[in-house]
Length: 405
Ligand code: FES
Ligand code: FES
Image (cartoon, rainbow, N blue to C red; front, top):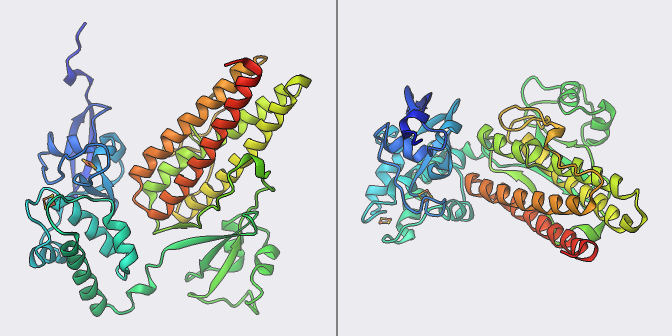
């Protein structure tokens, strides 16, 4: 029986340009579709519709997001701003004054991206501007004019607020000693005490004190002081189960609850590092029962340790984004063992399931790279993908050797 498209629609409320609107959406509708059709906001343009061109860029809680890659239902609980919500902003004026467009098709996407850049990085240097502009494409204007428009806005706001650069530096976690010793730089906030910080990060107080020998009296700290927070460390990773390339610094451009939700899916969702760790440890224990499978059992264990390292790095990102790395996914659903592909007593089926899990993880990371417009997080996810590809190769070699396929 044919079901009309409208029959599958569900009601939702969307916070759009400061107003709450009630609309009917299909679960698979993209935010771009819903903006342009039921809402009639045609400023966000359909270009490639696969995340490459940026013509559809809107702001989600102040962060630029390609609306063709986001489901409308994912907008629930977030503030969406489109070009229609910007009224005579300095960035819009600057695009006009600097001739930063010709046909204009890409312009609303560029303006949304550059507007967010000026808010998030009011003191952005050439390198940061370059990185941000890479997410949008223009066919007919020189990027020089667009850059000029951005720089003109940044220089105006900096001359009005010369201290602005003190408030918007990106957040980072330093990783030292082959990432076994993970630390986070932290600036003391008003009302902070060492006791409260230790509680917040679940640390013994003496560990926090000994990580900060520069603080003479931990009872007298003041806002603005920099301290180091030692995070939980990951056990030594066997080299043969990861690629030798270094991991990028654990760092984010700024806090962002929406990005934290996406990374929580990678952390403890159905397709996640937590699922991979649990699955590989289970397969390791099962395979260990059979001597001829010992080499694969070792592989499962080694790869699970690499996934623990990934888990720890994602946890660091989630903290920097302003959320808590609990074992919940982005929708606050707790991780469940039902996510694990057990395949008890069938090691070949286990190996196939492991390869499939790695493929699914890569696909999810690739989607998140498109959705998360933070170059630091994108770099980390791209590096994790390389390890996952390496794991597919290692699992596949064993599959061919022991299962003949
Ligand atoms: S339409 Fe091209 S990125 Fe969305
Ligand atoms: S101004 Fe025409 S595509 Fe950018």
